[in-house]
Picture 1: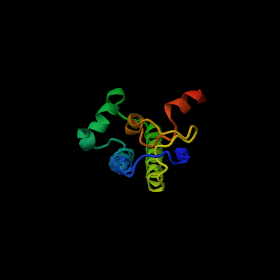
Picture 2: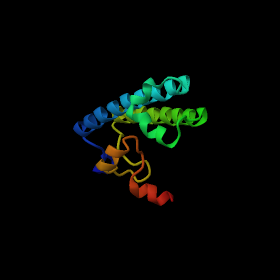
Picture 3: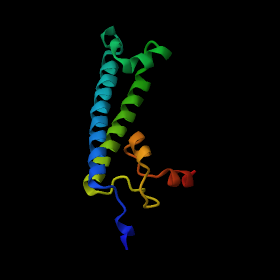
Picture 4: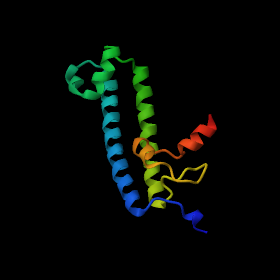
Length: 126
């Protein structure tokens, strides 16, 4: 009888909510950085102190506009996924695998807070 109410406790959900909000904040900052780099096209080296771009610069001095816009698109999708996760928290459906209906492992959710599949379900898809 109790099987249809598999979900994380409100306390857990509140923790995940904080985690996701932080991630959204950070993701939005990253998106701003990507966009400003895209706008400036690395004309002024002032942003170079940003650790986010240090990693990018090593491979290529100037990122092509294309890969930059790809990054921005990925980042926007990531933010969307995180916002959807917040909605699932409100609905109390967060952290439940959409295939197996079981709870997604907490550690996985900490790494991938917008996950909607358990590892089990992910493996089934391959």
